[in-house]
Amino acid sequence: MVESEWDSEMHTKPRRNFASIELFAGAGGLAIGMGKAGIEHIMLNEVDHDACQTLMKNRPQWHVAEGDVRNLDFKRYAGQVDVLTGGFPCQAFSFAGKKAGFNDARGTLFFELARAVKETSPKVFVCENVKGLVSHDDGRTFKVICDAIADLGYTLVEPHVLHAVKYMVPQKRERIILVAIRNDYAGKVTFKWPSPYYRIMTLRDAFFKGELYDCDTPDSCGASYSAKKEAVLKLVPQGGDWRDLPPDVAKDYMGVSYTSGGGKTGMARRLSLDEPSLTLTCSPVQKQTERCHPTETRPLTVREYARIQTFPDDWSFAGSMASKYKQIGNAVPVNLAYAIGRAVVRLLNQIDELDSK
Image (cartoon, rainbow, N blue to C red; front, side):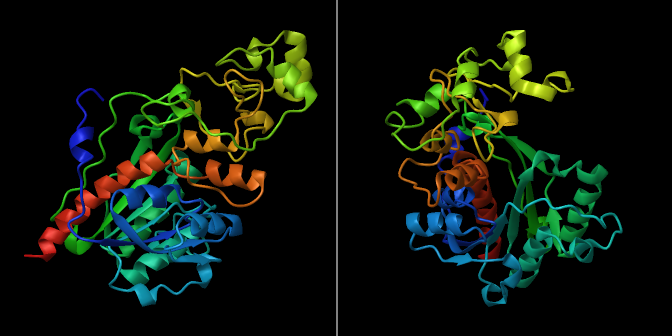
């Protein structure tokens, strides 16, 4: 991180307007970051109604196609797409490993992303997923994905697991990123993964005025604890969990989990101001993955959740409070997406230089 090229990479600018289609867009974390890097979205697809309302409310100029991706025809965008992106849900590939490539992926949502690639022929496509994708089903799922990418006529860059904390995100979130380059360009260009920032951001950076934000966290709605849970969590210090509770309190609170295996470090977990957050989930009050505020005995608010994912403060979320937490928890951190976007723009600039010769 000390020898990072972050500053020079921040000056990345697109040679022209690069067009993008994004699938499984969610609340817009990936789309915001790619847009900040200079990529223009000509269409975004999402099935969740509240997430679509979030996208349209914040970016009325974006064309948001709400509905099941299986019902979309991408042929109208053929030849217009520079980069196609999406964080596809990792469904079980029950028939994985038969070496049928593109056909082996049928019935999964990855197949729909692959179909969009086949119908639009982008120069590059980028996928984001949980880091466990590589080991899912003993590696057979990932083998099917790699075979399908090759079958489509693309070369997969050696995949990387990117740690969000290295890219100005105050959160210990890890995601695998797949970058595939169309074969007619693949041997002529080089993709360079983004350089990390110079230091790790903490919850203090997220919640208070400083390098990440120009003001303290705005007030917002938030979940609450039952009286019993609040009484338990008051006993937990910053950065602590169930192991810091008196044994009788821990046994009563955890029930059968007390004697089960595993560290269970998400239970009765209070975050620390001087560390990044643990990976956010779809709710800060789930018993196995609690995210208690560092200095107050309450769950993180919606806006605090959003800041940990580096959404801008003016990005509002539609739907119920539970839906807002879910949208934020499922998102790609904006600053991570921005770093990936700059790397993709540098790749597209190389391709554009080839096309202009």
